[in-house]
Image 1 (cartoon, rainbow, N blue to C red):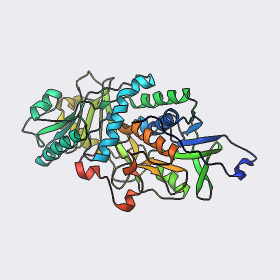
Image 2: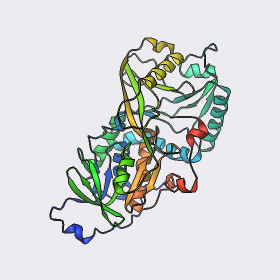
Image 3: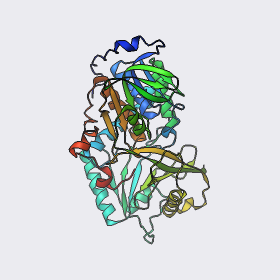
Image 4: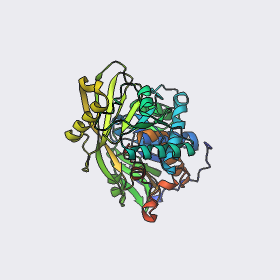
Length: 410
């Protein structure tokens, strides 16, 4: 895939803006949101399209939102062709990024196991393995004994309430240190002349008719040729300020970590049936997640019963964890679209683009999301990988319902 694209000329600002008595800096493009997707978008705008007169606006601090509140898992073993394509492209980018960015963000390809506990799980898992292989994604079906060889601490006893009947395994999948990833992209952006402006909240949009020509912030007006929204959890709020509605809801997403332990967990294990996924971070803490709270909200905390259920599930799968001590819990805020797949593309407002709706899949797609968002902003046209993920699918009905197809929630 080519790394360069011929860019279309950016539109001129209307004359009245140049006569503003208090002019603010003018940029070719503004990216709203200083998390992984926002910084990656700015990086690829500069690297792939030569646009360095860019500002990334973050209302808090760099990587202080969902980027610091995910559970670090990276994989591409999705069932549907559209999902597999964008996540596999991301994984290929992950594999080269440590060297490209000259930053060790602890990318560890330790593999991801998705356990099967019922006959339906087995059928879905084997189907997904076959689909993965057809799409060039590495995947294997493992028996219960093979699961135990990959991860000896998993309880594969047949006497369990939900016995392990096997599982899918993607060897190239793994984890990375989430905040380090944002810092790696940010450092590269800074070297190319991108401005990263923290404590700068976008409060409104400057429009000329139906065309966005800048943003209002708590630090003043900033003009721009194009604006991209990459603010996880708050895209619908920003869209409303721009004058349109996005088909997304924001939900708290639960996760927790234990105190530090000796290395005992060699891979990532996910179980949709008992509903937990567990890995062990480089420092030694066990990292666990489950699902989103059913209610909508913006609080970075969640319901304790969700935490209780995922801890119970983890202890059932890993009896060795029964004596582990909980260190802290938290909630991120995720945008969830009707089909739980991302929305990447143009909006009803000219020169305004959006990247949202990833649900629980945002972190693993960080580099590919930035790549295709940058392409879309620079050229005004979707990249082939995000053509299926534009807003138009909610009109045509061409949904990409990975949850309904694969029964995998993460």
